[in-house]
Image (spheres, protein in one colour):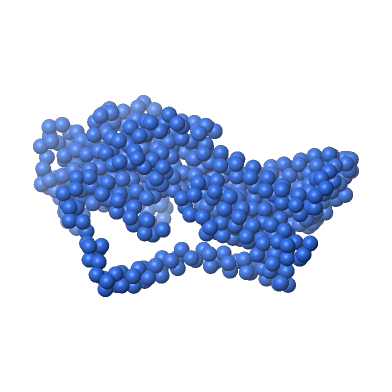
Length: 358
Length: 264
Ligand SMILES: Nc1ncnc2c1ncn2[C@@H]1O[C@H](COP(=O)(O)OP(=O)(O)OP(=O)(O)O)[C@@H](O)[C@H]1O
Ligand SMILES: [Mg+2]
């Protein structure tokens, strides 16, 4: 296989597995409007949990393909539960103890650092900062044992399947009453309360789901690299944001919800594939984090830049228009006063406005 | 129907910013009353509505709605009894959700939310009919994001949402203040139409004294956190703006002279 293509595959693998993290971040950051830093810890918790279960099961599980696959699935399910618990803690800190979102996330993340060391130290009577997934293999090697396909392709298939299932479930969930209530909570909390929504519960549940997905992603990544470490989640939030922002740049707000979720997966793929080529070019992985951060800063600044620069461009355009004399454009319609339906009137105006903004 | 008994509410207790917003407030609202509330800035009007809705808890006093003491009940729990429209058209609706989703949220006010669909097929017909009543052609735009609507349309929609499930009491906090005069009068007549049709008990704050006199069957004036004037029936109907201005001056030694009340 030529290097160029294999680099692409590696990037695509990473992109798919980390896409689940990005979808989790999307739930907290975009839907709940809650900048949740728990993610950095819960991603590693997912890896650590999956890792310790795989590592410990060598003592009591046969090394056969079926047993290995079974334990892999169990390890991933446990990771999801642990991630959900991490989200629960942040949710409780925020809603019950009224700790600000950022701080609540930082506190949980900090606490999780020790928890993750302890998880990986289970059975060795101490803390460990990384763990190999062990002799019974990983989800991907076990599938490889029964299916004669290269590991890269197995990861690709499992990654696509996982992303598709996650998107399908979330698409359904956010269409339900509970899911709608969650969206309303993130969109306009005052309104949500006035409509009788228990916004605390909405936030807690959202954070549980978000971090459960993040941990799922961590578990999959641990299986992919046959290793989990306490630092594997460092920078995860920014990576998630990068995928979300890239995804949003390729679709418009008019797209249905499932397409918005799918765009995050594509965003994650684009991000990871670019990063793989940057690695291929010999750039040190430490610099890539800086690059990513700068990229996200620029992307986040774009709306502001548009806002600042937009009017200037508009003015110039208007000046141009005046020169080419189209006076009827800027004048209000003459029959404004006689129009009965004032509200409908306004509507058209706003629509025109918003169409222009887009 | 609704009773406020000896309500005291102080903000920022124990700090230099301590502010008594409600001072021994007593109000008894009868079923079907439409009360207009006037008073200068900082008189405590909004705080009174927020206390009724459960946004703030009072230090002292009781709130009884339809025989139930709700004084300590969380805001979202008493939402089943209360419909609200706010001064800011942005507050009453979820901008990122479409019209039917917003209505569906309102149609579940006070009900347990489960894993059924957020918007059910049968509901859409109901929403369409209700939207038609607004006469704004919104029934043809049910999947439009609410954020794309004008302020007046959003207020009309909020009003519809607040009354979709009949509330025991409807709280309107200067809900036309942010609208242009024409739109404001349209929303006001919609308010009157909906509340009289369903006989909804209503409390409406306004800074427009003409509106305060014109709408409703009872008028109260607030100052310094309590009610200083309370008229109903014929006496209210015969009020003039002049009478009200006089009352203001008497009650406050002319301290309202710079107030925007005088301007309307
Ligand atoms: N959340 C709050 N925190 C601190 N002080 C508050 C708060 N809400 C209201 N106040 C204070 O309580 C007093 C009453 O305010 P309120 O909003 O009820 O007045 P209002 O009658 O609605 O006035 P306006 O006509 O300006 O809306 C004011 O002095 C105000 O500054
Ligand atoms: Mg007010």
